[in-house]
Image (tube, rainbow, N blue to C red):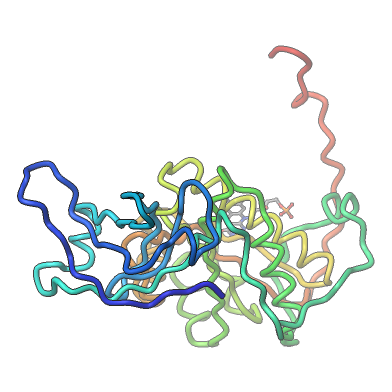
Length: 276
Ligand SMILES: Cc1cc2nc3c(=O)[nH]c(=O)nc-3n(C[C@H](O)[C@H](O)[C@H](O)COP(=O)(O)O)c2cc1C
């Protein structure tokens, strides 16, 4: 994996309006096998960042540290920064992960899954094994997103006490108490700056999770989270979410203990041709 770890001195030019930056102590184009714009991600003093390097010629690159980043990092305390940096995986493709077991295929075709899936609110005691859960999470990670930013994070809650507490925060979230686990889908505001896209991207990943679960025989219900609601506040605190991360939905998962038939939802009234 292309990953660099180094300490760098912060440089604050005297001129007003000039960039505050750090100088990259290696030729980033060479080290990251990059051509053109070099997009990087990583952490500075433990805080995550995603940015582009600015070329200064002769293999020299700088990383601008904007005001927001300076505040997050707490530059007042420390002028030497510890940096972990690698090429931005959004642009270079994912890293290769080995040893993560997943299910290769299921017996249901995509159209049947879309038509038959229903929300399940009663679950049996059966646990969901890691292989099945990994496959479901992978489905979430495969969703489309604006500019391929993939701003989602998935937090799996399995602890019974936490599931019980969460379910009690909202009368619509009772099924979470019975669930084998819950996936809290969160969005990173720094990665997808436009709020609409952040929610749309995460909704696409949620739907993938629901459909993949159905295909694997796992029941789900999408539990919506209102900003500022008791559930929302509980999750921010319990999951120790950084300010840039917003919880968007909680999906309860478990093997179904109810049988809900499919509904024919084809509705010509909703379909328009050429104009309203
Ligand atoms: C944004 C959103 C929020 C939802 N929130 C809840 C919820 O809090 N509790 C719940 O039981 N179901 C919730 N649902 C599930 C809907 O009630 C369900 O999808 C709808 O009634 C259609 O039923 P079906 O999923 O069986 O097709 C939510 C669904 C969406 C898309």
